Each structure stands twice: as C-alpha cells, then as structure tokens.
Length: 119
Image (cartoon, rainbow, N blue to C red):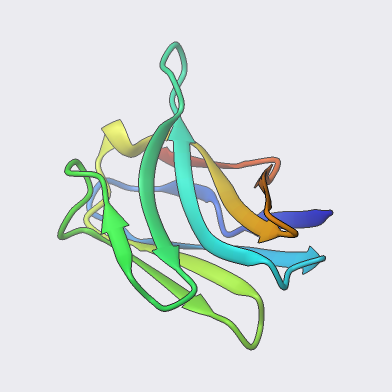
C-alpha cells in the first residue's frame, strides 16, 4: 500500500502563488508516476500535471506556463508550484500515484487539499 499526504493548500488572492506538496509513504518502490488532479464544485476531477520517476512532466493546457510539477525522489515527495493563480483554479487538489509491482498496477489517491483563489 501507498499513502499520499497533501499539504500547502489555502486561500490566495488572484495573481498569487501556492506550492502544494505530496509526501508518499509505504510501499513506494514501485511508483513510476505521480501527479496532481483537481476537482471544482460540480465538475469532474481533471488532470493538472504529472511527472514520471525519470522527471518527464506533462501539464493540462489550462495551467501550462503557470504551474510547475517537480519530484524529489530522495524525499518521496512531489510538488506543484502554482503561479498567477486565477479564481477558476479554485478546487480540491488531489495527489495521485501509480505503482507497478509484480506486473500489477495500482492507483492511489490522497485525501485532497483545498485551494481557493479569491479576493
């Protein structure tokens, strides 16, 4: 099992910045990709960004140029640096990880952290 614990959410004004963190623990050795998803009220959960264990990152079009995902393998932590935040970025942000072990893939989710962009 893998446990994912997010931190860093909060209230920020439009144009501001936040950095989210997600610490992975447990059986982490099979994790090959981690990422962030978000879910706004009344909307489906959607991809924000992912990063592989080799550092390859991918971003949703809506956040490109404003968001950077990074990964510290030594700390088993993935970060999401968000700049130039907009009210439409308001959502619960979830950390996600996929692991592969013994040819079995498993998906894990954190409990989420609220990000509110408002003046």
